[in-house]
Length: 167
Image 1 (cartoon, helix red, strand yellow):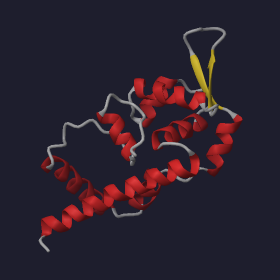
Image 2 (image 1 turned 60 degrees about the vertical axis):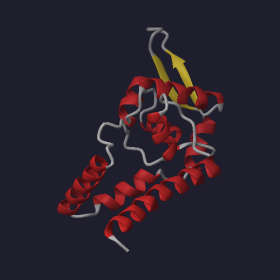
Image 3 (image 1 turned 180 degrees about the horizontal axis):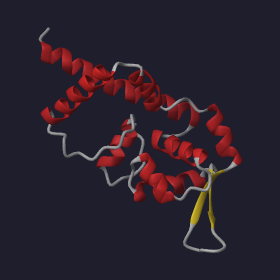
């Protein structure tokens, strides 16, 4: 097998692993990866506002608002308007949201980050350099992408910033 074929197979395995994890997350918790990340962010900083969540998870404000609407409709997140400043809206997990997070699987990027962090600095740099070069070879340098390992998140970045899971 030629090297380019081996590389394409390795890339396909990465894509497939992301897809399988996204499907498993949705099956076990009913959440997409962006929904899970937003809930984790709200859990980490209870009372945070949506623009700070958007910044922390590297998604557009419009995407986060859309996802928050879905989470609120599922009674997993509540929005509370400040009594002093009506423009300020704080985000909190509901009891159902807290319970769901307790049983939700770890986000794939958390698992990846743990393993990546254990590599030597030179190896981390080598992997980063190789992936950046691959992105360039695929003419993907200008594609907007958040550091989310989920196909539904990738689709969100490229299709009007929505939160639609892949089927």
